[in-house]
Structures are given as C-alpha cells and as structure tokens.
Length: 118
Length: 359
Length: 120
Image 1 (cartoon, each protein chain N blue to C red):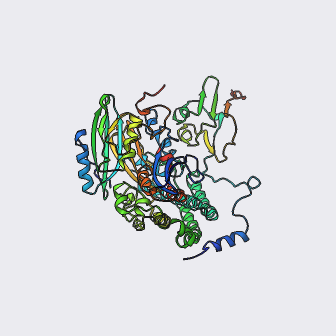
Image 2 (image 1 turned 60 degrees about the horizontal axis):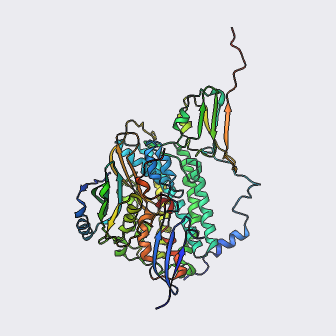
Image 3 (image 1 turned 90 degrees about the vertical axis):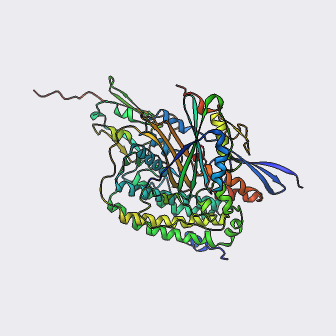
C-alpha cells in the first residue's frame, strides 16, 4: 500500500539539468521542502508521475545558502522558491518571478532560522 | 494601448473566506497580470513540532484549517504510524474513511455556497448551506465537534461509532442526498450560472500538468489524477473512479465538485456496508525515526506531509504542502486576460484555503 | 438552457416554515458526544497533575498543597486529552459550550476537607 519513495542526493549544480530531464519525462512538481540542521540546510524536491513518487535531495551549508532555480523547467516552482528565500534566507539565482523577500509578509525576517524564544 | 492601473484585491474582500492579496495590473478592464502575496495568517505552526511531542502534535495539525480539519489529522497520524511501523486495525481505517468523506461533502457544500455567492446568487448560497447543516450535525453526533473533529490520533481513532448509529446515518444520508440533488440542476443547467462561468478562467491540460495544479483544478482540465488512488485508508477496497471533466474553465471545476459530492455519498454508503467489527486503536510505544511523505486527497487537492523523526519524542521536521499553495501558480496564469468582474469567480474556483497555505 | 431552475425550491421555502431555529428563544439540545466543556468531580480528584501534563495548550493548573484545580476556559480547546489521561476518571466532558465572555475566564475549584470522622 505504501508506495516506494526513493530519495537521490545530488549536488546543487546538477539541479537544473536534473529538473529539465524530469520535466521532459512528464513528471510534475509536487513540493520543495527545507529542513534546518545545525550547519546545513537540507532541501528536498519531490516529483510525481502517475502516482510514482521520487525525490531529489540537495544539501547546502548554512553560510553559503545559494541554489539555482528550477523555474526554467517548472514555472510553478516560483512560489516554493520565494518561500525558501523569505523563510529560510536561501538565495535563489535565476528565479523567473523574484519577489526579493516580499512574497511572505512576516513580522521578523527569516523566521525559520531564528532560535526559539524561551 | 490603454492606461495601466494596479488594483489591490484582498486581503479583505466579501468573496474571500480567508485573506490573500493580489495586485491586479489592469489595462482598461482586462487583467494583464496578477501578483499574489501571502503571509496574513502565517502562524508558524510547523515549528511547534519542536516543543510538542508527536502525540500532542495531532491537535495542532487538526487546527491548521477549519474546513479541511479531519484530513489534516488523518494525514499526520498516517505519517507517524508509518514512521513507527504500526498498522491500525481495519475498523479504525473504515471509520477514518467515513469521516474523511463526510468532511469532503461538507467542504464541497461550503464551497458551492461561496461560489454561488461570488456571482451574486445568494439564495442558492443559503440553500447549499442549509443542506450542509445536516451533514455538520451528523459529524457532531459522531465525533463531538462541528468542524474540528478531534477524533484522529496516532494509532487509530479516539472514539468508536456503534453499528446502529452508522445504519441510522446511512438512512439520514439518503434524505440529505435527495435534498442535495434538487440543487445540482441549478449548478449544471441554469443559464445565468453558465453565463458567468463557462469560458472563464481557462486552464488547458498541458498548462495544468506543467504548473503543478492539484485537485479539482487539475481534474477539471481533463487530467485523471486523484490521490485517493494511491490506496491509503480503505480506498482500494471500495469501488469508485475519479471524477474528471474536460472543459478547463470555472464551469468544469464546479461540475467536478458537484459530482464529487455524489461520489462521496456513495463511498460513505459502501464503507458503512463493509465496516468490520473490532478494536479501534493500538497502543503506541517508542519514538518515530526515518522520513516519510504522506500523501492524501483533501477536498482541495493533494496534500503532502513530510515527516522526519530522529528518535526523540519531538519530530525533527513537520512540513505540510497544502493544495492551495500548489494552485497559486495556475491561478496567476488563469487570471491573465480575464475581465475585472470575473476575478472573484476565478479566485474562488480554485477553492482557496489560505489558512492551510500559510500554516 | 434552463432558466430559473431554482424556482421550485424558492417557492417551497417561501410557503413553508423556517428552516432555521428562532435562537435564542429555541435552543437545540446538544448531542451526547458533543465536546462542550470540562467538568471535574473535585471530591474524587487526587491532584496527580497528569491532566496538566497532557493538556496541549496548558489550560489546566493543579496546585496540590492548596488542593486547587484551575482551568482557563479560553485556552481549553475541548480536545479531551485530560479526560483520557485521568487515572481516577473524575474528569468528564459536558455537552454545553462555555459561555462567551469579554475577559479571560479562569475557573478555580478547591477540594473541601471531608466532614465525617472515621468510625472506630
């Protein structure tokens, strides 16, 4: 009942090429997620084709949080990537529709990177 | 070339159930571009996973949104159960399916009423909500609350529903379905409704696939894709097919939801007929480890729960990708080229649930 | 193309009585399972504070030395976790909703000492 959910770890420079090849095979973008670790941020890109689910993982160090955009192949990624910029402080290069931090209106900048106030 | 004006739509608007902001760039009366921005109801719920243990987090997950509340709780519970490697008893799975489909019926009836209100048909709005009251009463009788069910937990469901109650609900649903069937001809055949919705907000099949649309937005453009076919809960034991329409406009999306209510009535009846006896929960020990993507079909589309456990009682990551978040990109494309009075109808046709979008 | 398909429903609702209740003159009886508010049988309570630990919002405060059990009605989300956790089963869920109020509503219950003496 539970379908296999393979996760392939790739380097951030391979990301646009991998996304383009998945798009040409007919996969649709499901979500882009970020998990904060102590020193690194772990990004997971999920794709789906007719109920077959597969994921790409990119690990980015916290002090060098820059990734290339996949809006070249998936225009819908602009909402997810703007959210990454606003909440996690990641810089996304070549973003098709870039809000420069104004997509998510929050009281504090990059709320997900802040330590919890006791 | 006409003069361009920028008109702000939202966050307060009579037609929006929740606040979203759109900057509409108009040339005379035609919308040329639309720029959405969100964040009015962002509560940072995902970070509550750091303080609440995995059993208590169900209460947070259920309260992300009022309309799609039960399926959030179900998705979270299913995800943690997979991380813990427990299997819930079959009676619990059937009860979850019954409640999920009742939740879908009440959500679609709410949307049908709001959709009628968006083009000014208030008496139809009130009649849809009158039928919805009866469904909400059934939910209160079985689960305890009208919109927040409070009945899903990690390991099963919190309360049982007796077989006599289920049989009585099946009879009540027959009468409710008859009342609902009196309203459907208006949504499907009435000329005034068709004038406002046919040809408005076109989304072709290729655009829907490449922009990552989900739910009725995707199925209204002719793509056969329903997350219930993955087979969680008991959907593989029931006989049903996804509801698909080919039009790609607001009329097609509305027809998909109208027919999905009829499908849900049928699924509830099938589930009540087949429900086995037995316990409704299992004891939970240990802490979740590993990661898992739990995918379910909410009334608005496919919801994805990404849960990552690291062996402690707090989850490391609790991430929800709600269907309305995925439908914002198709919305921007749909709005290009339409006229200003059509904007509320198009925005409502994706069924925006912004409190889900911005947890 | 059909016109005014809703005409039959409108004619029927115009000629029959209201579909709504005339609240507040007519109130609906709550269902047996309705989660209204939490009730504590204070004389059976042993002040173990398991309910305080299980409460997801922190609405319950238990003070064992003074034998006081307090609940903040505005923080309570009527989930029933305390009812499930109570070892003495003195907590129960009542069906009536708490009344709305413009200020915070903390209700405090104190267990009185038992009046009878032990029989020799």
